[in-house]
Amino acid sequence: MAMYVISILIPWVFLPSMSENKCVIRLWYHGNLKMKKKVYYPSYLKLDAILSSQKCLSLLESKPAHDEMLFIITHQALELWMKQLHHELDSILDVLGNSSLDHQGLAMVLHRLERITKVQDLMRAHFTVLETMTPLDFLDFRDALIPASGFQSLQFKQLEKKLGIASAQPDALKKYSKEVLDNHDQASLEKPCFSLFEGIQAWLERNPFLKFDGYDFETSFLGMVTDVFDQETSRAEDPPFKRAKDDTEESKNIKDLKSKFQKDLSETNKGLSKKAFLSALFIHYYRDQALLHLPYQILRTLVEIDQKHVRWKQRHLSLVRMMIGFKTGTGGTSGQGYLHRSIEASTIFPKLISIPSYMTSRQNLVPLPEHVSKALSFKWV
Image (cartoon, rainbow, N blue to C red; front, side, top):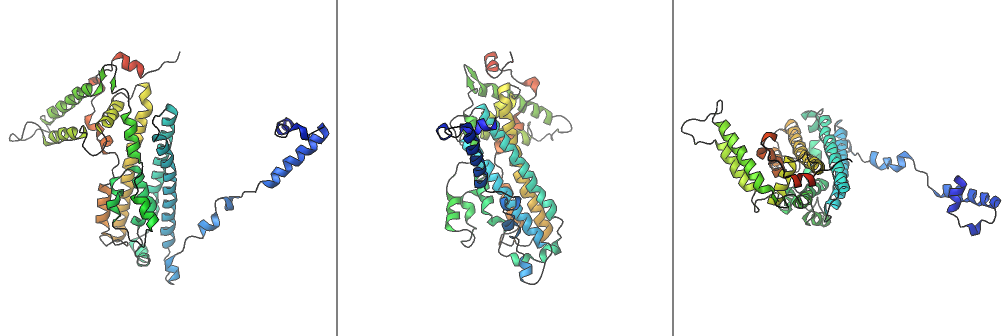
């Protein structure tokens, strides 16, 4: 069988007889083995370059600090994981950039979004190792790092920009010194790019079931969300939530929720467009429909990515508090203050996170018209 398969690749005109065939095939087979370069573990992974790239400044100054090696390796590993996140995001953005998405494309997007969440878990776990270092251990080499700082990470800024975080926009680049980022890097950050936020919004806006053959989800949904507000208002008037007599009939929280709801449905409000927001609500309300299972999982994973990104920054802030307290950061930032502002600006999909505010129980769910339900379903026959 092997001779037959190989011989197909060689024109018969060069093989006049079976005995000669065997000879030529043998030479062709061995020749190709010699042409293929052998690959070994150390050379494939470029281990010489990787394992020789940890240069402790404390050793160069003849003041060896044991924990500097841990500090370097942890941050190098974080940069490698960020490279993987870029790799996954780029492939996802390629798919979301298409004018239409089929089931296979969505399945691939979900799979790689879920992988991103696993990498995020690993990145946050790095702090567990770093927290074995005490403030004294860190101060042994901290001064040698000035003015190096994590906020100078080009990959991290590019990552936030691809996610669609506002803090990654040009206004946030003013603190970069020309010594850190060259002109090419500055240009790459200032250049507009298609983000995950934009890709998800465009996908949600193409939901064909918001207005489907006489059915209008917005009208149906407004009735349901009114019931939600009424239930919350009624609950606020009962013990133990009852307000003082001089308070208004509705609690301030309900007023704030109603006000936020109006903003969420405003086309001019920052965040998801009205159509994309309604589409996300539709998917959440009717997730049990067969065609909505996959979109629902995608929305849940996006919220998970959003929250894990914020938690990573919160864990970083916790580490900074532990190591330097209220000292100024090595890069000249305000330390804790800078990280607080960064966390506040790090939410990617605030409207997706707000969706539970407008959900009701299944008992109050308005059933889909039969023709819409049928279009969203399938049967094994």
